[in-house]
Amino acid sequence: MTNTNWIDNELHYIFLLKYNGDFADLHMQKSEIDELKFISAERLEKDILDEKKYALYVPRAKDYYLRIVKEVKKRTGK
Image (cartoon, rainbow, N blue to C red):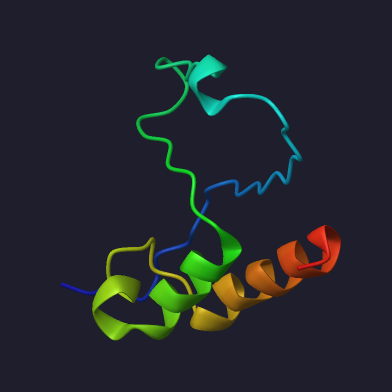
């Protein structure tokens, strides 16, 4: 069933952090998030361009994710 009157009221934040520590030292606050996954910008880009893997992501236009990849690469010099 499709609801054409549906409005996305979610807040979306993307944080970019350079972290030189050990990821094993980080602890997820389970009351705040359900799942946390670290992937590279290159992996995100490949997943978005692969139709089967893209379907596993939150439904967004591909351009949304590709803009994130572009910005991450620009800010990290990769």
